[in-house]
Length: 152
Image (cartoon, rainbow, N blue to C red; front, side, top):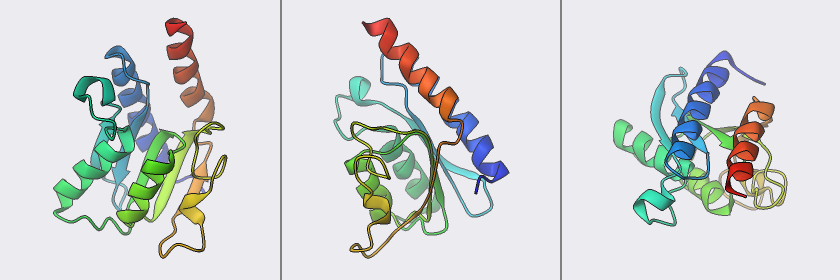
C-alpha cells in the first residue's frame, strides 16, 4: 500500500537521483523515513565521487539514518529508493532491520527485491521487509533511461 509519506519520500529520492546524474553518477536516490514518515536519512549514488564500491544510494541513506538515530537498528523505518535494490543493498537493509522497502523502477538485471532475486522477503533469513514496488515507476525509469541514453 502506498502511503502519502512514501510518495513524498519518493519525490525527494527522485531529486537526489537527479543530483547524482548531474555529478556523473548513475541516477539513484534513497530516503529513509521513520515510523511517522519523517526523513531521517538520505543519499544518492556516490561511487564515482568517492571511489567507494559500496557507496550506493541505499547504503549512504542507511548510514545517515543510523547516524541520526544513534542506532544501527532501523526497525519501524522505511527505505524509499528510485531503483530496486541490488544484492548488497538488500542485504544492508536487512542487516539494519528496515521494516519496509518502497522502490520505483524494477531492475531486471540486478534487482534483489522481487525481480532477479527476492532476498528481502526470503523466509530462510531471520529478518524480512515488506516490499512495495513500482511507486512513481515511470518517473524513476525515465531518469535512468535518460542518463544512459546521454552516455551512449
